[in-house]
Image 1 (spheres, helix red, strand yellow):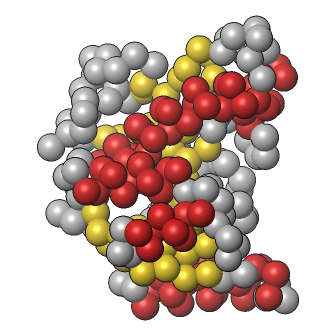
Image 2 (image 1 turned 45 degrees about the vertical axis):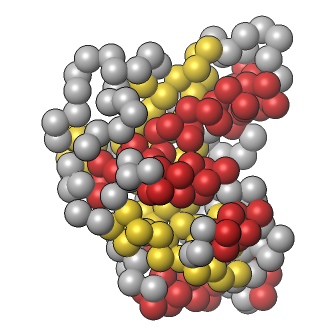
Length: 222
């Protein structure tokens, strides 16, 4: 089953590019209907245009309140027929004005092993704390920051000489792997939420890839 996907970005859009690549090679059963940015210079918009995908820029600073901004996002996504929303480096906190119309249908990628290190500079937080395992999390979005049920996580080693940039680059490689995987599971109707637990039907219980939980089924499940 192909799912209609909308993607929200604020910056470079490297996770958007990973999603675009997996759609193109058949590893993700999705059609990206629209990419929306809150900044006109977001590189993610250019990535979408090159792929022939509709784009829009909705500047948050042109709205008197968050709910009005979120309402415009909802209008554009609904107009495009979007079923699932992926936040790919979208640096805005969404309000109930957005989350209620898309309840249970908004996902995010965060560059830390939640619930550790929520919020900004997650890569730097991990480096500053001297962690030995860092990583990233794909989760459903609720009204609390970086809080919703976890779909998939991946861990990477962290070293004493790591800084925010070096650790962040290692984490980003895994982000590009697990985000399309999570979206593919959702598109296939294999994901259900039971309280705070996300259950993925038919996901392998063996370690299909080092550091991943649930394990990846390389390159992607069919």
